[in-house]
Image 1 (cartoon, rainbow over the protein chains, first blue to last red):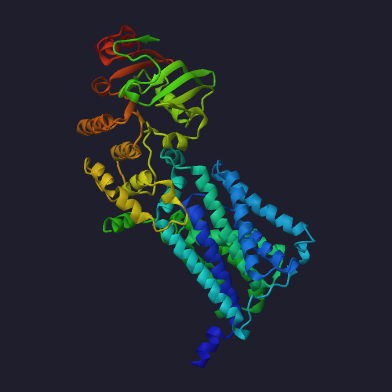
Image 2: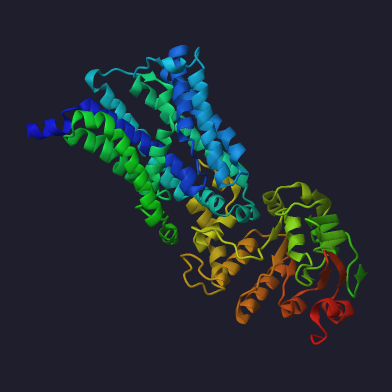
Amino acid sequence: MSAVWDYLFGSPAFLIFGTYTLMMIVGLGILLHLQLGVTGIGNFGVAGFWGAGLYAFGIMQVTYDVGFWPALLVATAAGGVLGLITGWVIADLDDDGVLAATLAVATIVYLAIDSEKDITGGRVGLGTIDFPFDVGKRTDLAWLAILFGVVGVLLWYARRVHRSPYGRLLIATGTNEPLARSLRKPVKRTKVGVMALTSAGMGALGGLYGPIVHFLFPTQLTVAITVSVITALVLGGQQRPLGAFVGALLTVGLFDIVIKLYVPLPKDLLEHAFPVTKQIIFGALLIFVLLFRPLGFLGRMRRERHVKGLSRV
Amino acid sequence: MSEGNGRAPGGRAPGGRATIRISGLTKSFGDQTVVNIDELVLGAKPVEGLIGPNGAGKTTLMRLIMRSTKADTGTVTLEDGSSEVMLSKLPPHRIASLGVVKTNQVTQDFAGLTIWDSLLLAVAQRHDERPHRVYRERHVRESHGEEIRSYLDLFEFSEPEGFAHSTGEKKLLDVIRCLLLKPKILLLDEPTAGLPDDVTAQVIDMLRAKVAEGMSVVIVEHDLDVIWGFSDVVHFMAEGDVILEGDPAYIRAHSTVVEKYLGSGHV
């Protein structure tokens, strides 16, 4: 029994960090699901909105010595305001334009943080950021529990959106804008609103990531985050609230937790070849899914189930 | 423009119906002028037909009214009682909110939304569709479920709780969605295209009932039996302009209409 425990939890720090990453990808994936899978906004700049929150939190904590809750509020606001502006800019663009513009936003955020030195610390980094509480050795575990709770709330909200008039408005906006407009629906406001709301969520997740890494670097905001989130969501099913969860388990869960921690790979291979191989496999998986199951493993939305449920109300 | 029998003069309609006044409206695509209307009032009579040969500009005119296509010049004004609203300065969703609603010539639907979804979307008010009101579905369903059911009971949908499959079902859905908005003026762009005769008759009966309740209809339709039997007045469009208007019998027999549109064998 003890041997099994040691095998499973022998490296709790690595396991917890891997689970942090998993939860972060799931959380971002749920928010991207509301943007892309429901409203049809292809946000290729997830790292930018998340990074704006992460750095806003870090700057508040380190540079201005602000407490945890106000800093988290600023992180949320930073993501939200960036989402609001981006939403307004992309509202009338076509799909290609939206992808390019959101990628540009992420690039701007990255370059601004990378080139600025006094406030963000530039390439030297920004830190240190501590957990807002200290319960000894269990602090990181408690933080993980909080992260589970936050992701749980996001999942609950996404599922509720699917069952609400708001969700129906988002789906209508995402599938046929002119028809939605002809039914009195303010399409532009809806798109700007959902971008602001979900980007605020991404900013908040960024803020919650700060204490995990303690020290912030611009390299944490590369496109790899966005690719991981998109891969997880597309793989699992972009139209389903649980899609990001299933996809993240198959990608981050399998590679960053199971293989990394439990498969006895040579250290050299693990440090050098593994990260590259992982990205190649992610890319291949993405192509495979897009070719043979474009709506991911969970498939399309099941609106008819919702309607039948309603008729029994 | 000539006026035939029974045509009310332009301006506010008798009986207080809302009307759409079009002034100096033009639209060109490249070198081709598609719409060029100096002055026109729509909605003065309960049901107004709009006919003309292909390319006359009927659909473009309707799209210009709804601002789904932007005009080059001119104004479109909604006159309702003592109020006047310049539609040509409003976004499409605001025009629909004011009670001017249009069905689509080309079949339109929301992929991913069921028939019920699509109709609930039409009736849901803005305050029901706020991001924080995630428990509002039951309220919307209870407020409008019976009304939706009454429309769905009129027609035979293959899967009422599922998706609209055929073009005919999508056409019907388009009309029902618009009626659920309780429009003052409903612009119908070939609403019965592709529908069987019996369903066409049902649609017209349904529209008559709504007209009796005060709604005005402007209808573009190539099934001329629908136009002659349903319209109180008919506008004949050719080359972007309304060149004739009058009661159906007058338009049907007019030599210009026969020459440019109907052909001599029709009368």
